[in-house]
Image (cartoon, rainbow, N blue to C red; front, side, top):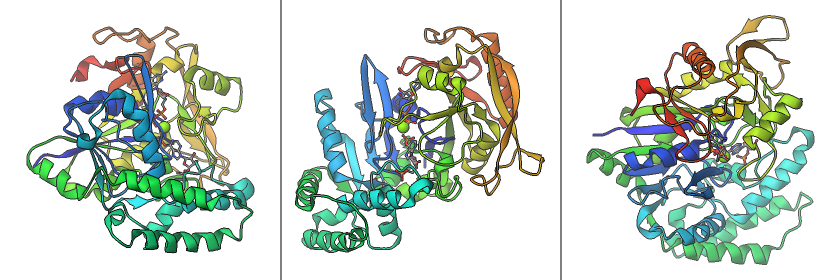
Length: 428
Ligand code: GDP
Ligand code: IMO
Ligand code: MG
């Protein structure tokens, strides 16, 4: 029996997971999404093409990889149809290379409306949800009310859809939300008809059979560990388990068959939406990071909040996920800075210092304790595998490795597939 490797984000999302999954996909027979839904935006760049995927796994551009949307995902058929249509021009063999779990939960149009209603009712305390219906869809899943992908093949689907959405409409009456229901319903049912032509199957069998046959599987995380429903900065989180364990429940893989865990992180930090962010820079340096890193949401276009690297947060993510190797992204973004800062500890309200994630991160006035490091001050975009890294960058990497006790195997120096640098010691 082979083991499935898991790739996930160690921060608040948008670490560059999509790029790395696309880079690694030729080594895998299957790439599988295990949680989240259209809240994700995973960007791939190669041959002058830039493409953002939301629900479809990032292995889709590699002709030999089978791509699986697992049972842990919440799938919006309307977004799915649009994504498939946007992929048409690449002539990919989607009917053959894409498999959807019959057990994945469906996002219905009223989930999006409920997301909007709940968010606006929260006022200042809003999460900053992507408004894609993620929270309400997972609520229905856990509340045992949800509809699943496999249900669209059954005769009573229309009836069950109307029953569920009528319940939602009754709730929506309490909120000042306007919408055109006939139009939303028509769009949804059309998208459901479209979805029926794809491979809707028991993907847990597919995956376990492939593992039995020694095939390699890469599980692609969405969001990031600090947005995990259990271990993230609750309540400013998403509604799924974004951590390694999510790959087991979201695909039907036993924990015994998890292999490597690739932890992807940016050389600094970003967060989009509300919630605590200890190293956030609300100043010109933060602006510079945003400009330099083009830090605007891939799904919503919102400006991302930016700050220095946060080691206590990374240590926590490494622990919860059982990370075995680290991938550091966007090193090029730090090139203009003469001096870099890395947060090693948090100073709490009572003056004590800790490198442990406090329970009440959202309420504690954390002051980050920084270690200053010299910047490399050299562009990295044209670096090729085999070239030596600037000494200051090596130093930055070594410091993080020492702190986290894990190797940084890969350094990304630009958005393109080719701007990917394997460190000599770990050349694959
Ligand atoms: P994901 O959600 O984790 O897949 O990440 P996103 O695609 O939302 O955000 C990452 C952004 O950074 C995308 O625009 C990528 O094209 C870009 N990107 C990825 N790696 C690098 C890198 O090493 N350098 C730079 N400058 N951009 C990168
Ligand atoms: P990828 O996969 C960054 C954030 C939202 C909000 C919170 C809850 O591209 O890394 P939700 O719509 O899930 O209810 O929003 O989570 N969020 C993300 N932030 N990247 C993502 O995905 C995100 N998906 C959700 O901004 O703060
Ligand atoms: Mg993203």
